[in-house]
Length: 229
Length: 365
Image (tube, rainbow over all chains, first blue to last red):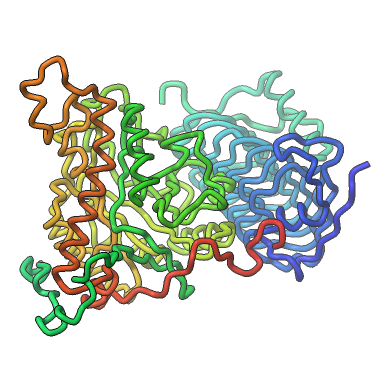
């Protein structure tokens, strides 16, 4: 049974959430790099759009946050399952390393920028520059995305359930974009590929992991960097 | 352009009556070469034990003896270095092991790499590298020393930052995440469009700009690329600081031809910290016998090996500091910060490193 820690952000510095959790749960016997059954289940209340919430969160069984958060939320977090019942500001999950993040509302620009691992899911829509400089993480936007999706992306996966804005895939050198709707403009750095069975499997797994019921059917289009770009 | 004669030490020498009364002449009085770097909007500042630093470990792959020598100079002479994980992976950056006398450790942030919060939790100084350093994957030409070209120091803005306000927010995040009482955050830029770049750094909320007038890529004295003239660079940087209205914004400089005289000149021109890599490498520590050892020419087989020669590094740093102290004493001052104040560079009161800011204790946030 994982211990439950309940925190109120009115009494805790948002950027020091990890320290507050460690102090509250007093889990001194747990190695910081090894997630185990003793990792706490954290419930955070009264999030009122504070910036820098949950920077460096790690080794937590489950984190539930009630309310919207500001910029740079969950920057550099790893080994956590985080659910945010609200919306997020800019640079959500910047440099995200591992684990799963689910945001039930909308997000600002640069979702998942420079993320190296894990899955970042936004059930609503996101502004510009989704997955900018992505380095291996998976980003799922259920709604629409703004301009410059996957700019400078080197690896990882971006799934857009709605439409994408201008200049999708500019400077992209690796990774995959799954797009269900239309893109206003597609960069010349990428090209459309045929949706093959491995792509469908990957898509289905990521949607399942994000808690989205979908047949992961043929309606998604696949984009990758040009082979000889 | 700044009049070089204005920066000469003799301009700041106290009158005779003050110098006689000064205790700086007394035997046994310890000269204080400490300088302070302001930290953010707070009134606190970080104290450097000496206004000198080395970025050898950042720009190219040092030989193991040089790494040891650099770490030794850091611990014994107060030479500020980048690391410590870049210099000695076994060294810890925990708060308990940090000592003011051991010099400051600067944690580099490579502009286009993911942010790892744990690396910046306890460091006292953070410096953004707006150029691809050796440790950065952006620099591809690391196979041989001569494969490193001038373009390897080209200016780079993080690809995920498009606006000054986004950069300001990230700097603020780093300050709040860090548990030091005075976290100094700066940016290193290759001298190019200095006015515009310094304005950008000052407007973004950084505390200082590190201006690279040259870039080193080897342990030999001639292995460097020059980017800009020091006088011109400092003139442009000071103008940018003046125009930005950030009187507390500091400057650090890396330039070749660093001598005792140039140190005083640059300090007088508003620089708070000076890279002494060219001074160190000018003594050719990578050779089997240092150039300053005149016996090496005829002792033949009795020449010292390279690892013994690098032990000289610490002595060289100490010698330079003693020379600086001597110059300072001659001017009638006991504290370097007092000498700098005469230039209108009054620094805020430093905060001891062992004093935590309230609520910053990781165990008691």
